Image (cartoon, rainbow, N blue to C red; front, side):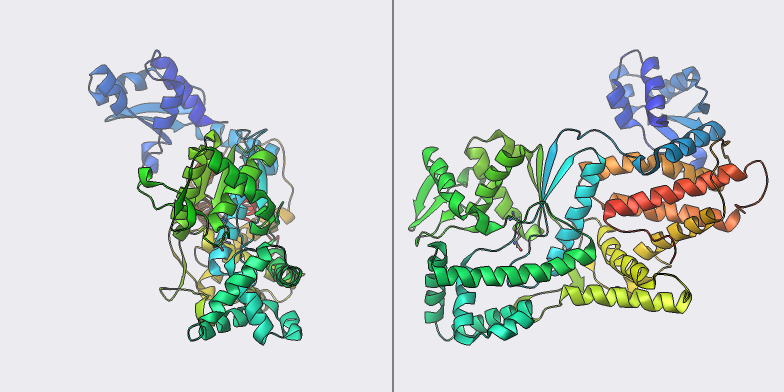
Length: 560
Ligand code: ARG
């Protein structure tokens, strides 16, 4: 059913080996306007190679290509445009989707290979920030997409559970903390303590020294320090789990920074052996002047290790453990320098696989055009935001469909779905303006709009049965949908290759729009010889919408 493949094959055969099939596939594009056909092949590359006018080449090629799946192949200027035989092609597409079901669009490009995805990775004793939400949502979707492409995805939550801030927190807790309060409201209490520490430290510099001391104790395995740290960690993790539960996200590993404590010596020894460690003002660093970058800090003058040391060690551990083909770090763009440094140091250490590591950056979440910040205690608690979205979704249901069964489940799917979709419909590098009202609009470019379209298709399907033997459809409304359906496998591959879930969200919006147009213009359940084909079309749309949403990490209710 891969028409592009077939077209490319025909072209390649007619080109007598002047271009490889792969190159031809690369060149084939979609014409700007539907009247220009379904597939277009530009002849500029050939023109250069053959020193001939592109339109002349196009004319000759067009005259030579014939195939039962093609209605006609004509040249238009420098392009060879192919019009598919709508009846034959649509029958083929519909049968494929119906047969493959939610496997439609899967590929085996990653079969037998592991991809490690480091995402979410919030910091213990700090609120789960909007940035962590983006990382969670993008990383989770990339994991689904990778699996769809055949990879084994390893989801790693590299918790920020180590670092000098724990020294500060311990000091603050010992001075002003209260066990009951922390237990009742861990993240908020711990954050308050942390904020208070910084306020007090402005006038009392001794506090900073004390914090350093306590962190050192922690690194040296002091019992009191360790048990406080562990308690903070457990309480925080419990809070984070609530968010993961709401979002429907799980991890294969929660090995955070602390996990690497006893593994860092080995890393430092390796660095030494390679002659990479340099002394700089008492600290040990790896110089990266050759790359025009500041040095990567490995060990501070007081012997404390750093974020980068732990990331180096984590990369070594993951390569050893998972023998990954790819390792992604879904982390905000403000950490670009850090990852550049870490990857380069690994490369300098002689690890070829350093090239397989990739930082997947993303933009900020903005509120009224400003960055949402967690500093100075001005924090938006994510769990509250999610509950708010669910509550709003519930109100919409009460207003529009009060008799709906399982209102709460559906409200959760819609509320959570709206947040995820709102994030993933934007290219990840862009900033996202956060607005609950916008993201919940059913008439808009939203998750609920796609979910609603899926529910609409489901409701038609509940009234009827899908037949196996069908004919093709060639009216303009069906054809628009058929062409979208055909693109799904390609869109998934592109999303994976660019680590860009937004291709899928945009695709789903377009498909939903096409379907709603169809729904508005065509009477689907009407007894005539094409009824079965129309129902098959509805089924295919239903399948692809649900599967596309799943790849984004969003559920598709049958009714809403
Ligand atoms: N905990 C870090 C933060 O919140 C993100 C960690 C990302 N992953 C990593 N391997 N460094 O900024």
